[in-house]
Image 1 (spheres, rainbow, N blue to C red):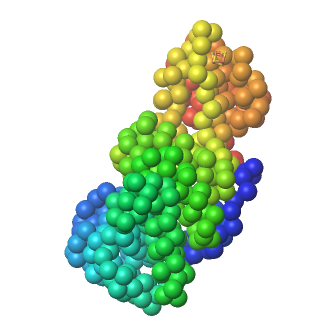
Image 2 (image 1 turned 135 degrees about the vertical axis):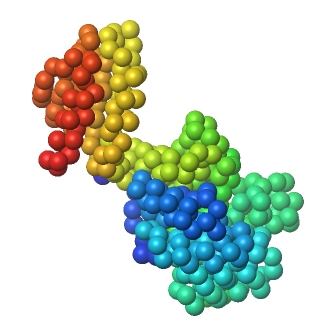
Image 3 (image 1 turned 90 degrees about the horizontal axis):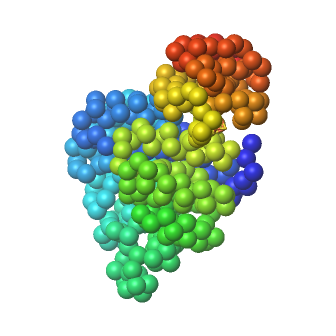
Length: 357
Ligand code: SF4
């Protein structure tokens, strides 16, 4: 399905979801509700799950959140990772609450003894840890040595922590290096991937909102994924977390690494030949077909110039004309429809097709 040869990493299990070792690349996001508000958090997890999120991370900023995790975990349709910073007791509490995995940045947990406590508890529960490194958790000594939070500094920190944790006899982990800079993200993950065989969680952190966030993330992740690096991904956007999932699938689908559980749209950019309001048409169709959870390829073309070719590649297509559209199924003309009825007729055609497959 994909031209990409993925790097073989160790496989871990996060609450029943396999990561690494040839498993499909896992799509993740993080809730932005107050974790102490169990119902609101679960409502968001349900929405994420509905969009295809396979693992969710919840912030654990205090003890009440760590306790709330028990109920969240009990009712969540997908595995829950506790996201803990600074306070090792919260990590222990989250493990006690049944978290499927705990994310820590060992560099901000404090002493090694505290990291050891977390590792011990995870080991006893048989759950993995996500070992994270970012510029905020980087040791001062490495920042000095490398003149800032460079890729080499991040890699040395991650590699060092992995070694220390292995020395405790713990190997059930995935590793992530996060940077808000796509170039640093690429370089550090490339280097780290050469050094370790643990599954890598990849993403550009604090990428920004919509356009810049998506472009930065896709720029970095495309390079890494093309090199076979990355076992689980998150696209971090200053947007509703649910939207991150759509972008993850769009990216993985584009590279042939996962199939979208939604309509795969192909549409023309429009030009001087256009005689139909294609931009509005595509917008409306996206809205009206958002309930389709099957990988159906749809082409919406402004005129017949490219419509014939594209419609052969698509399951269903529209070829625009002067105030009408031609509906096409598997390359064969179905009927000619007035522009005013085009959306309704095409939605009907797609829904019927989905019933058939
Ligand atoms: S499909 Fe037709 S309208 Fe759309 S960009 Fe191509 S030539 Fe122009």
